[in-house]
Image (cartoon, rainbow over all chains, first blue to last red):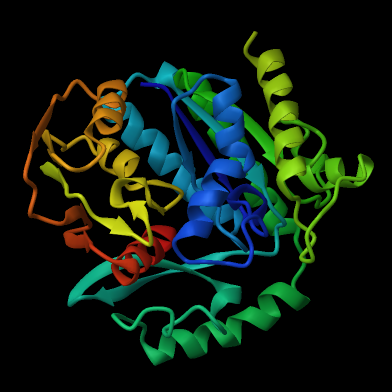
Length: 235
Length: 97
């Protein structure tokens, strides 16, 4: 079985597709109409995992992609896996905590900037320690507003270079792209699609939603752009 | 681990076609290397399910009357997906683990 794993932020998840939001039907609509599934169809890959999440960080994209690659390669041929990542801005990050889920301690990773609306009210059965929540609030402002991004730029280069080396060594096909457009000259040593999804939309005057995300047409055109890039990387 | 697929719909969508963690529940289950069998309710869309299972795994599909819920085990927590709330909770967990 061939599989396409896509990682990224809201531009990967398909944010603003299928509105007004319905908790059951909208995720299904987004899954079918965002670029990962459209690209998989064009590449004749039958299984898509769209791991995009609104507001996510490079830390999460890297962590989850590496885990998926490792788990996939433990029981399936590496050559059957295609990984496509849409990196995001460098100011986002997450922190690891243990959450209590139905009485079991489970790993849980919270984006710093989600402290204000994600927890704990999104689920009546999950609780987060108040100290963790107040700590996130304390970290959020200085992390995102006052510190420079030199160290985060170096971390991002590590992520991209390590993924490239890992996939090359294993035989996994990897495409690295960008959803948003932070300064990227520091990453030019790693193979990547130069234009970002948001730049592509601007340059081609593609309609966006109220939140600035691409809609159905944008996802379809971006999937075609990625297919063209795939064919140059893996002719 | 055995996957039971009942004839359950959530807001009109067959449970196995609902999306959590960025993929369908059926694909999510099939990606689990511990999966050893698939049991589908006779009233569910067993033709499509069989095709998907056949594409993804070497497993065959047994068809009968399934009374157990659609269940996934993650990090030692068992998620039974039976309705909108349980689907939401599974999705929330998958997004942040």
